[in-house]
Amino acid sequence: MALQALQELPEDEFKLFLDSIDTIITDCDCVLWLDDVGLPGSADVINQLKQLGKNIFYMTNNSTKTRDQFVEKCQQLGFNANKEEIISTAYLSALYLHQLDFKQKVYIVGPPAITEELETFGIESFGHGPDLMVSDVRTFKNSMKLEKNVAAVIVGYDEHISYPKVSKAFAYLQDENCLFIATNNDPTKKTKNPKLKLPGAGCMVELLRTSTMREPTYMGKPDVYMQKTILSNPKINPHRTLMIGDKPSTDILLGKRCGFRTLMVLTGSTTLQQVQRWKETSDPNTQHMIPDFYIPSLGELLPRL
Image 1 (cartoon, rainbow, N blue to C red):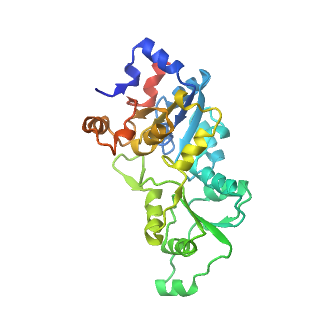
Image 2 (cartoon, rainbow, N blue to C red):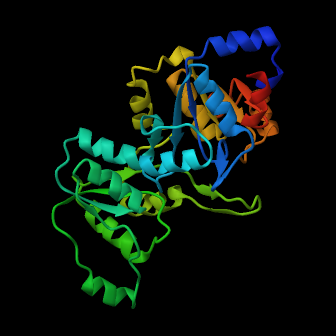
Image 3 (cartoon, rainbow, N blue to C red):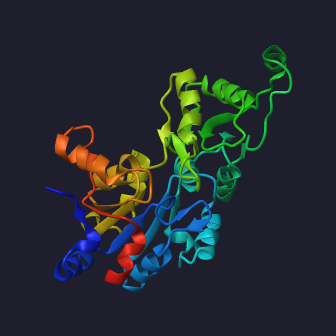
């Protein structure tokens, strides 16, 4: 049986579907926007759903912005969003340590947003920004200085990734009591150029996962901490929640694990043909990544609302 196109449901079925949803959780990159450009109609759809009384949450694996910065971006692109609706991995990394009553220092291989979110919980951190190899490995090794009282390493998307950074993180993680936290495991980062992809945070995490032979605790989709955080929200009834995303391996899989209904938009890199092949082959490795519905772009929902 073919996958269901949400925008093509008969009027009565679409109304029943819409009435059965109280909460909508949406991915951001490639669903609502691409880089700093909103995708056509996406803001109008999300704002209209909110006007209809739906709870809206913006969920992203992107660790390069704080929740305040995501709100600012949302508002610049026309989304009527507030801070309580943002679920981001920089924030979740800080929340995770706060829930552990963490009192020591954190070394960061990642963006300033992680540092800023940690600061809101009074957690001391260092490491973001450039740390260049200025000579050779021997000289670096002999001069490398490590901070005391470091009990966690957080790895996210770091545009300043370098040998010194990886070496310091590796050194701290030799202590088995030092927490190893990763914002997410996305291997690539999409750009406005459809022919160009860049390495994602997952590549940077893999450097340390391989070298330390340790498995990090992931904060992002589709992993356990993100699931627990969502399901602990009293506004979210899994049976009346819709997860919207473009990536079957993160967005749709998370939705399935949480018991949500799922909607895949085709404005990312996954094609309808790929998902149809998964459905036809009944491969157990892909069955939980098959969405309940699909739509070419989120903006195409607007006429139905």
